[in-house]
Length: 67
Image (tube, rainbow, N blue to C red):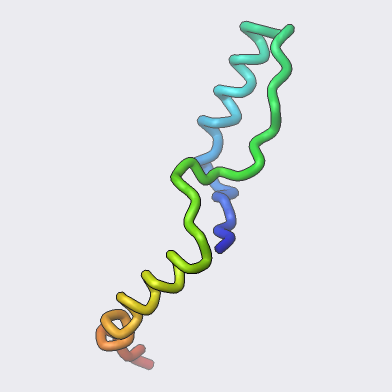
C-alpha cells in the first residue's frame, strides 16, 4: 500500500530539522528519505487478513451521501 505524504505545512518541521542539521554539521551527508513510513512492514498476507477481518464491518457501517 502506498500513501502519499503531506504536501502541506505538516512537513515544514521535517525540512527545518534537515536545514538545521546541515547548518550545525555541514560535514555530515544527509540521506534522502525513501518514504515517511516509520512503522513496521506488513506482508501482503497480513494486509489481506486484516482487510478480510474488518471488511464486513466497514461495509456494514457505510453511510449514504445526502444530495
